[in-house]
Image (cartoon, rainbow, N blue to C red):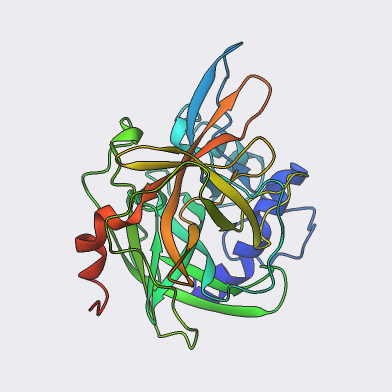
Length: 311
């Protein structure tokens, strides 16, 4: 599959998943709402009554290697029980036509059955060719050739903007999907070419956060009505401060599916600065997106600095 074919497929995959459509082969051009499209969104895990479940705020979309019903059956046989296949979207926010350094990020995973899984996340430009995001967006087997993903700079992945290929990714290998509260959910994606957008600064200073501090969350995830692919933002608060994590949001303003890897911005000396990276959330039997948690960026400055010309 060529980069151009990926570019034509990617913006529409999640839309097809929402509509529950049939199958499509890799490389077939899609139109929004195309009746033949296949996209299986993984990660809807069973929830126990009166329970709270930790989920990663990411969505994986599966594209079959061939079309028709046999393909759909093959895709359906993939395991759906992993709790780290959920993602996060901005709830209670509004469309964000600014923040040009915040991008949609899609990374391709090669599955043993020959399927390609596209992990939908959000990322922030911290250098002309470097995106900051979450480790759980990319800790898997990547495709063998060509770009391993794409980033989109713009407001709506269905509209005008700039698509840039991702040539490599690096994540903190201390991250463990089974021990999400142990931190290390941090990664970078390296772009094929520089982007003429001013990068966002990231927090490199030990910080004493206080519950009640104001932050702004940005992501391409799902909104209150379940739609994704549009950049949204919301101003909310830090509700919990832990040594490795920041608990962000309130009942009506927080992240949800596909905001994974997106930035939490706080004014530092008057400059919007990345202090957190969206990592995971919690779901209950009545609400799939509650209690978002972010990786504290300042704890991983040594990891990040090696990919950036940091002072």
